[in-house]
Image (cartoon, rainbow, N blue to C red; front, side, top):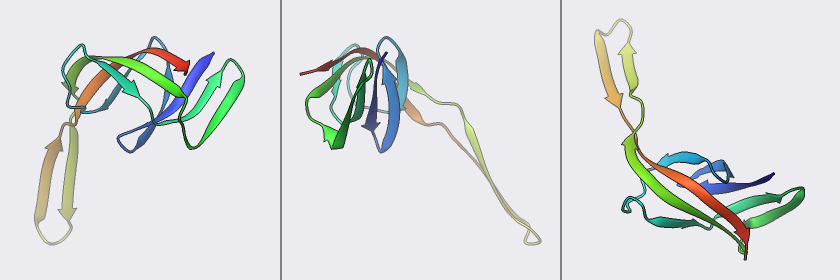
Length: 105
């Protein structure tokens, strides 16, 4: 089983080929090829490569499927005995990427 751990927009993701993942908004066009190069760890059927901090020779190719918005989260702040209440909603802008290939260059 091939998988990689990649750092994207300050977060780390476990990536496998043939699956899609939602990341924070990446400002590119739909259908465009994207290359992920901040690979922290790569497992090639038991052969484990660990970067310090990144692996330079592992490239991940992906395709941008769509731009979407995440689920709404409600932020509710209340100060007791002060009669202050603040309700606010937020929807995160996301980009869905299909991982096509993970290979060693």
